[in-house]
Amino acid sequence: MKSFKAMILAAGLATRLRPLTRRRPKALIPIQNRPLLHWLVEYLYSAGAEEVIVNAHHLSDKLVDSVQEANFPIPVNVQVEKVLLGTGGGIGNVADFWDERPFVVINGDILSSIDIREVCLKHESSGAAVTLVLKDEPQFNGVRVADDGRILSFRGGAEKHLAFTGIHVLNPEVLSIIPADIPISIIDCYLQLISKGEKVMAHVVKEQYWRELGSLEGYLQVHQELFQLREAPLQGLEVGGKAVVHQSARLGSNTKLDGMVCIGQECELDSDVCVEESIIWDQVRVKNGCSIRRSIIGDGVLVTESLEGVVVGTEGKVKLTAGRG
Image (cartoon, rainbow, N blue to C red):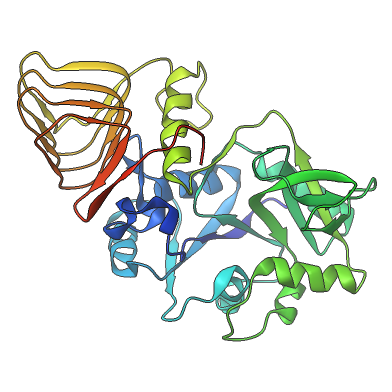
């Protein structure tokens, strides 16, 4: 499969990322000051995608505006769901976008270097109706796979457990089992296929980079990992211990940046500010002498006191837990 169409599932409410996602949809959370959606589109393009569609629901107007303003290398369309349709309903809702070729669907809250070209080739050679990319990630493991690579269930069991990465390749015939205009999970659709004896196959990856960014702790940890890596999983990501500071940000005298630090567009840090292991989004103002440690500061926040281990948005503040979310 030399080229394909692709979909990014981005309509979810992103409740695990609140309060940050009260002002941005999840697909627009910044990864090193660039919206995640932009990284995903370029990831798909580099793998052979010729056109992408994104579904949207929560804060859909902001996602539409971002796509219209972007200079993507391929066409990117947005399908707004007035009613949230779930992963299966979202795929079925854009049935007129697909053609006769197998197509690729990815979750809108992942960052990955998994070789999609290889997945597509494996899919075509196996004769599967669907191929799901799986990886051993203990926090998410739950998919049961037979010795021949067939997926048996998504509820665990006595056999091999792996995690679904949110990357899958589908034959267009699968659309026929997705009910029209009814919220449904694509996993429920896959279980229907399995019950009918259809081949729903696993493509297992091991060393290739993959992270889920659907939680506050996971989002922070991805930035910490990138800071520590020597080789970028995607072209353009900064690695090797470099702070990422937007060129429009203004840093006052005696500003100290320690460890992984990302500072966004039009931020203003007054004098004697210390930022350590933290992410600061756009248009944030930090007053004199404040320190920010292991925290995430959302768009437009005014910081007037020192902060540690918290996530702050204009609509509230929550504590970060120690573990990965």
